Amino acid sequence: MPGHPEAEHWLTLSLLPGVGSTLIHRLVEQCGSAGAVVRCQGRLTGLPQGGGRRLKQILANQGLLTLAARQARDELERLQRLGGCLLCPESPEYPQALKNIPDPPAVLNCRGDLSLLSRPTIALIGSRAATEYGRRIASQFATELARRHIVVVSGAAYGIDAAAHRGALAAKGKTVAVLGCGLDVAYPKSHASMLDEIAADGLLVSEYPLGTKPEGFRFPARNRLISGLCQGVVVVEATEKSGSLITARLALDQGREVFAVPGRVDSPKSSGSHWLIRQGAQLVRDAGDVLEELGWGQVATASDVRLDQEAEDSVLTEKERLLWGVLEAYPQDIDTLVRRTGLCVVEVHGVLLQLELRGVIRHLPGQLYERSDER
Image 1 (cartoon, rainbow, N blue to C red):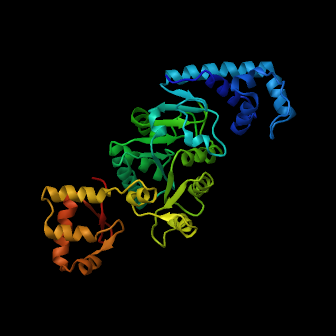
Image 2 (cartoon, rainbow, N blue to C red):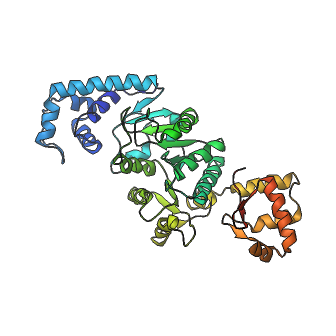
């Protein structure tokens, strides 16, 4: 299991009450190592800003330090039994990307493939109460990125997060889930099997000790790690009050690229995404747009790949390919499809039925049709 001699000391400091990661980094910089801070027993002069008498009392309290050190040893043993490991800023596996953000975590609990921390990564984020459109687009983006060997990062929440993780896993790609609770806490509970799957073939990351409950105030702090780990952040679907906009702001503060997917102009679920676009975020329609903006090349969309496969097998007829070509992610009615294809109503109905039977389109209430990205 990867480890660093100083990791236990970093963990000890992180378990002291009232001592946050920023202050820990400043103390380590002043003393030379985390172990030196633990051993100083309060004999510090010129405490960093944010310290003071209270901090000196904490570090001088041998009983408190002893308790934190014992908790750190117990934590490491439990983490090892879970199949995880602890990274500190001196660990070779600690992501360089996080070292450069304003408030890097003092420790990272990890379970899974640590090599993903050094791979090209894109975050896909958005509303927990996502629409079917938002979930489908998130899955599509994740699938396209996974096929290009880009690691998909998200927060394992309901809605967009879960769709992004599952899209990457379905494409046999890699995904990282950054948690706002302990590694051993399944949150939401209904995502327990997904989290196990990510741990087995991806990576779970948390800066919180094992057993930490998913309290609301932890998620904004979690979000800085989601954006910090990535080269770019894609807001798939978000309202104007969504926490995703906080993550987008953090990404900009960290020097990351921010992208937004447009939605319906009359949908409040996409109002936050549209606001980001008005503020200068890059509008993206698919993963290829993201990769092109980052200079990573282009990638075929999931729909294009599926259509190519169908065409190679000579499954789609000429009229089916024509109708497929005008169908979009947004639902369209029969009259629109007749106008755009030039086919008569009877022909459009017949072709739609064949495409629906093949599973490449979806029939919605109100005689509306759209592309399906489930296959």
